[in-house]
Length: 263
Ligand SMILES: [Zn+2]
Ligand SMILES: [Zn+2]
Image (cartoon, rainbow, N blue to C red; front, side, top):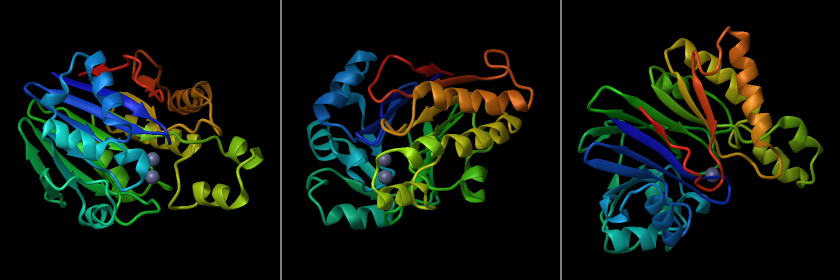
């Protein structure tokens, strides 16, 4: 059995719990350690059972609670060489916990095999992750990416569950109050993925057998959960798929709300 639960998902903070059998990991620790502990407690998980954390990139909304959490719970941290290089210049890492560089070879953590894949974002070496469980299930996470690339699509293919960024509605962003420079950053190839780009990708992934989707990292200012949801459901209906029959889709809320998916 595998359990996938986004604890937090937004530009305020991100952390995902993945559990399978005896082993459990976090992807990112972008809220305070206390908030992460509380949300884990809410899904019946002892924070001390998290022995490994995988970081996607160095932005604060992905590492805010990392230092305190790893020190307190003696967790190991995995990240790309570029992310390590960036974080080593900050005080986001404690000097006690073990840091490991993850490469394309991936890493075995108990019953899980975790592999990074490159994404396009405005930092040194950002990545998404695929998690292959010993029972054959594959779960994948790709948020904070300006464009969908063949590399990302290839990595996600064959997943049972995918959490993909559905950051903004392009019209809401363009007509909204963000400064021009910020709009350009978000819309750029190293920014964030729009609802439309997400929806288009989900339709492709459904064809490769993915049946469970989480929409993540929604913008509070430039999106609405119902809009993100409807955009993807509409794209999936265009390829003849019906929610509930052919796939399940959930919007990951900014703060944990018991919406885990069990595989
Ligand atoms: Zn982010
Ligand atoms: Zn980011």
